[in-house]
Length: 313
Image (cartoon, rainbow, N blue to C red; front, side, top):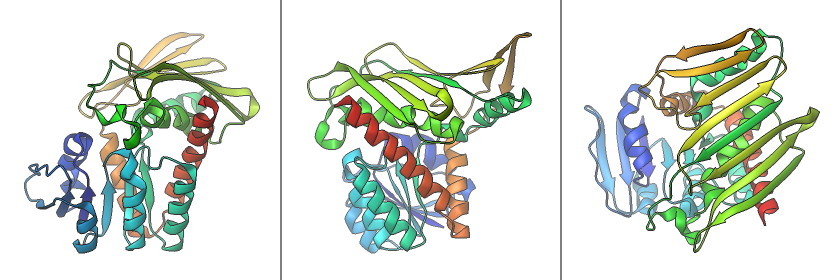
């Protein structure tokens, strides 16, 4: 399989590139306006381009991974789909609901996979969390999500609104996806307030999402505090907690803390690579020609993110 990568992001270089040969990728085209060159793992054939649009026209890749600034996702994803390729897009895949709907409609018409790379739930610890509730014959009812970290450098694109910057776009996918994963539905009510602003974009927000049956998610997200990355999930008879919930490191065992009336029990999960598991699932869907689940997931998160932004004003 040949993969075309549009963009030269750090997340691609650090978390995706090293694992591609193990996922069946034998050749790679990397197209970045920055001219970035990187070394690939042994056995992976690399070609470099300075213009993603030119690479889309000339590359014979089977699939495209878009990992540019947020503002360029829609144009590149739509062009890749129009050319008949499968597409994976970094989160947030699209900056408005209309673009997401247009891309999903095109992917469905062409029978192509269109997947948003919000990968945290691929880690086996999340399946272990769901199973912990099932083992007690109960289900999650409340989610408390916190993902906040120190200020980003001033030159980071997340400070630039014309590039799709701001905390709502950067961290919004982590606010809208836990309810989808753990409640398997979209919220009935969405409330969001900006709690911190920089010179050009919002740098923090807090939100409340209310789901059918009285279930809820309360969240705090931003890049203006000390580091915290945590998910607490509460239900009848069980309260479960995960640190490093949204960016699970691939090389470390991670604990799941379960607090029950009988006491606290910690379960350690072996190291796992959420990015590799996500790409493996997407590549398998491409082989089957079945992208319906990925399209449904992308649209559900896009709808909720649009409501989050609308509430924030």
